[in-house]
Image 1 (cartoon, rainbow, N blue to C red):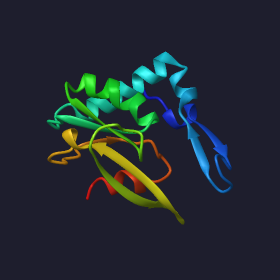
Image 2 (image 1 turned 30 degrees about the horizontal axis):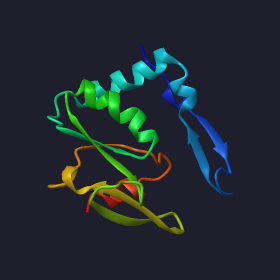
Image 3 (image 1 turned 90 degrees about the horizontal axis):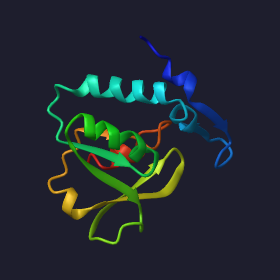
Image 4 (image 1 turned 180 degrees about the horizontal axis):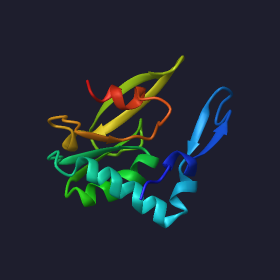
Length: 135
């Protein structure tokens, strides 16, 4: 059964700032059959890849990354917005479009060595945040 997942994700224009298209996945999450299918499709795509860690970016990434890590029998590393983690962290600043001043932290204990095999993205419109942790 093929599912057009994009049709289940609402786009909100000019949120949280003018010019931004916010991809609201809560509309997909409200439909258990579609959400289950989305996770199953992702898991099937990567089932034979030998993934040992799913890296999920704050906070929508946690919603996709957790069940995906479970199905892949993988660990999960959580990347949080700067200043949200109490542990020792490795941080990275990045530029999203024309806007600078964005930063993420990952707990030092989960990032040594940093081997990102699969990223469950928070920022669907841009991969700038995810790419910052590839360094």
